[in-house]
Length: 526
Image 1: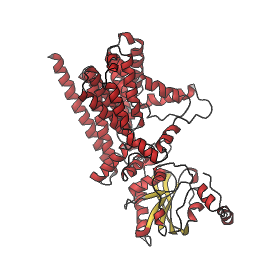
Image 2: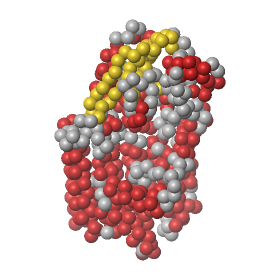
Image 3: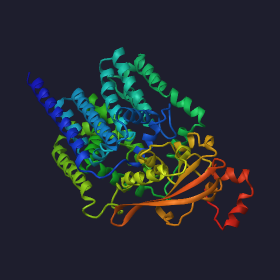
Image 4: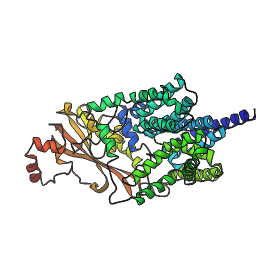
């Protein structure tokens, strides 16, 4: 009776916690922040306007989610941010249920709280990227995997297949989950007999079946996603980083996951591994779904750049394990995490008053200025001679195209020119505007990085495909005391042919190089 009473108490506390945090984040979005969509958010939002079975770099779930948000709520950046907060609340709930299932409600409460107060999870709660649904699916899969192996039946295996399969459609990382599950069953004396049953094997095959539409799409598009994913494992550090690359990775992870909380998670994994024979099945289960993955990513960090979010899923089980194995570190871990989380929430609205917006210290500067720029460019688009026969053509990084696709009041289909024959984004996968020969184009040239130049011209390989290209204006939006977001805007009259990549144009039109020299223009490098 006492145990039931305590479980009910901690369950009520968690409900108030998750609802309170969710409510605070929604109010914070409405009242305290002055940034808009991140580049990836706008990019995935544009995916959602053309639902498909896969996209250039990722499986389709994030595009479907963005499409559903647009259909249900329209074109509002705060809807995207609010959805991220709801995904974070779902992940916290699954962590609580996991801890309660493996240990008790108190462990679940503090395991979820440890994750909630980390800077990494705080920032993830304000950005609807592929990691938001991935973390939710991974934490749910942990819960349903434990239930399936503890008391196997068709319904529990089916539930595991469903949540894991949805996770596979969110990010390729989810394919690691069934591998770790089979690995745990192989080393767990208590659960090893399950390998002789049909449940784990049929579930693994059913999870892999969720990849069928993704594989089919890739077969139709030159294995674009596979090639892009492979690039993450081909890149190498300049020089020989070795231990320095590892130390850099560890330092970033410790900062993102609240230093002491991160240390407690790593220490709990080490303690569990050291006391493996005497560890409980629950401890071993959580360790298997954390330690191998973290070790692999750490090894990768010694030979190539590693994105900070890659190991995020492995901390879900590690934080729950830390509460169980090292409760003496819990108080200091929570205080440290809470202090860092408060600092993040306080710093974001203070960037502008402190004069840091747009500076090198403003890690949100890529989210600023696009709404105002979109309104000004949208006015130019409305004023062109043939608005009904004018498309939008954006140069530079894919984020420029996706941000303007979202923020232009007309929300037009936006095209992007890529000088290379190798696709760099979804914009090269989608068909170009070959059907718009004879149309005009508003050509948007962003000023960014070393290319900032108020007199910058449109690349000749774009220009010569129109009868005439003329500047119609420039948009300059302050995003800080010493930083502006600038776009040069041109009107391309009567497109003669669709501007293909550099190599293709030069092959088809050998006289192009002579035209370059005659115009005094420099050949671009792809």
